[in-house]
Length: 231
Image 1 (spheres, helix red, strand yellow):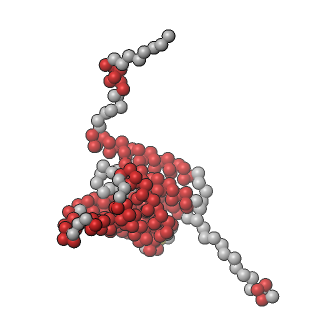
Image 2 (cartoon, helix red, strand yellow; image 1 turned 90 degrees about the horizontal axis):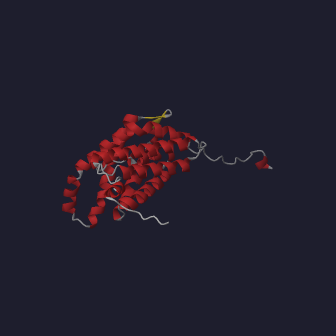
Image 3 (cartoon, helix red, strand yellow; image 1 turned 180 degrees about the vertical axis):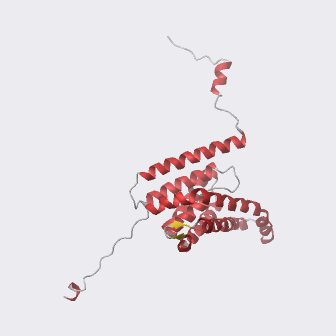
């Protein structure tokens, strides 16, 4: 015997039960909750890794950075990528920070919008990672990260990154209009800087501890025996 699906008005409303308009504040709460869940799951995964798994940690950091940038997109110019790349430069060096920066820019822009600006974003975050590597001795002292110094550098990095990305506008704007464009973007630069300071206070210590546990030890090099070398 065949049963025919009969969609009554009540049944039709049941199919629309998930279409709930939450508004921007409600969606922001959901996005922050999801980001916290992702962060907790990645932290649990990190606990099971052996020490020296720096490349795996970079993948986990990239996943968290991409997720954070996408989920926090409703907040203008606030995302954790700048601080994560800065910490990667401090602990893992410039080359790994550059790889992380480019991968995060490309992967997140596949959803947020990919174009010429993606290259400038990759360059901007790479510069941040290089700065972290160059200043690592002043930011990571006696086995701990210096939060006030890192927060100051993170705030400066916000302006540096935004202005590097703004250079992409020169492909379509004149020099005079470009200066106006930079000035009008200062409020967004300030939001980026403030967000970075918050992320440093929130993420710097736990992420620094995770990265420190997984810094790959240097590969031992063979030392010639001075006695046998004379034979």
